[in-house]
Image (cartoon, rainbow, N blue to C red; front, side, top):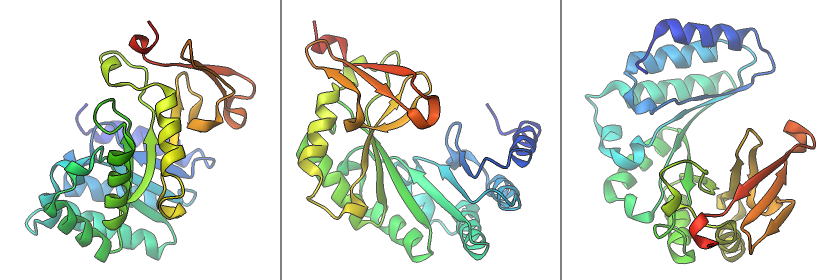
Length: 245
């Protein structure tokens, strides 16, 4: 879906009429695709809504094209920094949420770009997806978390892979993320330790991986509740099929 002022206006109208909304994510693809003018338009409009206290732009750009952050001829990062500064002056938080999955994505250019953002006061958080054979061992995940911390990028979430078509070979059983957290927690400062989470299928939201109601490891079926969101509704997550044939 291409950027559309009409579609955005409908969203802004809904947000303005709904005081319960305090947090907004600008995503839907990748905000790196936005022009600097679009970035300013979206950010300024959100900052002008009194009940919006926090919002973040989601982008994998820092991981896949960090040199853009250092390009003085590209207005994107300048617009982002200006929004961050404006938000801080208003007592609101404007953040960048990015997406590194392995320490191999953290190059020397990434380090320069991350330092550039840090020096200008931009809050950057990272969300990692647990992928079989890519980052599902303690050494790799620990190295990624420490590398991000060294770059002043907060390791925010490690996600259990969603149950979506086409990625069954990349999903891990719940037991893997549980063991990773068990091994990693306590080895790095708590404020730089990510939350290991499952985004419950069916609208249950993000829950800590170790907060399941039941987990039958032989069958690979776990059950969950999200009392603050859906009351006593029960959600189910299934380990990869090939691990339980």
